[in-house]
Amino acid sequence: MDFSLSQDEKLFKDNIAEFCRKNIAPRWIEIDESGEVSPELVKQMADVGLIGMTLSEEYGGQNGRFVEAALAGEELAYHAPALSLAVLYLIQCSWPYIVQKYGSEDAKQEVLTKLCRGEAVIGIASTEAHGGSNVAGVLMKAEKIKEDRWRLNGQKSMVSLPTIIEKLPWGGGWVLIARTGEPAQQHKTITCFLPLMKKDGVRNEGITYKPWTEFARRGLDTSIIYFDNVELEDKYRVGDVNKGFKIAMEGFNLARTMIGAVCIGCARWLLDQGMEWIKNRNVFGKPISRYQGIYFKLADYWKELEAARLLCYKAAWIADRYYRDKDPHVKLGDVALWGAAAKLKCAGLAVDIGEDVMKWFGGAAYFKETPIFRAWLAAFSYVVGAEGTENIMRYIIGREVLGREYVE
Ligand SMILES: Cc1cc2nc3c(=O)[nH]c(=O)nc-3n(C[C@H](O)[C@H](O)[C@H](O)COP(=O)(O)OP(=O)(O)OC[C@H]3O[C@@H](n4cnc5c(N)ncnc54)[C@H](O)[C@@H]3O)c2cc1C
Image (cartoon, rainbow, N blue to C red):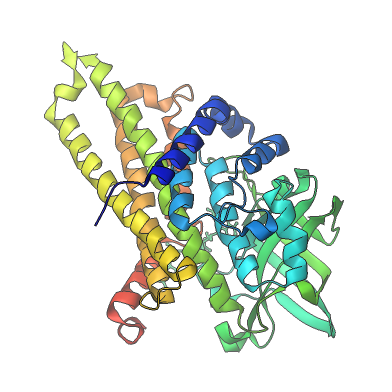
């Protein structure tokens, strides 16, 4: 067992950190304050391989392994802990990978090549107002209207990226989960599609959106999306008809693994801020780091962060064993298990560290001039729900560890 990074991995991580130090760290607060991610920045990220990291070279990607993608995600989040850029990055590591695995060659050549050039992005459109946790219960309808044509009607209640898609020169869309049969059949009548809200610079007028006002992670604009008689060719179907539930779950598994890495970067930044503060803040004549009430907590969090990082990198390694190395001993259920564990552990830890670091800052934490709250609330999005709630992660872990028959 070797816990050190290879020479190549170390060099890669250092290069990404250097890029982030120069180009991202000076802008992260401004991005979070304005809520705007510019197309130029997406292009810059693509130019250094940060968009399309896990995609094949055939489409212009980096062919990166998930462990490498996790290393880059941690650095990106560390240097921009309000997370909008890191989340944009992690979504592009996971959902386009699903399109690459299950999409038609035409759609891949059309969309993934633009994505790797930083001209398009792909998100996920799953959640509906009646309960995001119940993916098998989606009501959004996809009707086959001709041999090679579908029509979408319905709403998705929380979907990230529409404003970014609108601003990018080519555009993009979402892996969308839709009903292609009787709702009573639950997961057996679900199919994935790739509707494009903007394609070749032209907006699809049938897809409209109404943004929520996010209190953190700003720049990613999560919105309600309306699909009104949106027609699309069969080439934008992702995988077989009525097999979409499992395909979507694969996307969630990968995204959750990457969320773990991003939350590690966020937690590491928060802890570094806390350490600097307690070493330098003097109260009652000495630095507050000397009070056991403070440094015992710090010790606990240091230990938790190291443990969480191991869990998260193991999740990425499991994904690589399954997808890249085709290891017959690693099952899809393992990818689900470790991805859920990484998300549950790392997001919760980042929030816990954030809350205590806020307390170490005392009253100063409560003013916008102290940016800790931006990282704390960004990680909180992953505790309350983005890509699955904590209880759903616990359900997956329980199901994989105990067996489905013991939890359902
Ligand atoms: C910032 C942000 C960005 C998002 N971006 C996207 C996006 O791009 N695309 C997208 O599709 N969705 C997105 N979402 C939505 C997200 O996926 C959902 O919030 C999540 O799946 C939970 O759904 P819900 O909010 O409807 O909660 P609900 O499903 O209503 O759950 C409410 C509560 O009930 C609990 N619960 C539900 N079922 C069970 C159960 N069986 N056992 C125990 N407890 C249970 C949950 O854990 C939770 O605590 C985003 C959310 C946020 C906050």
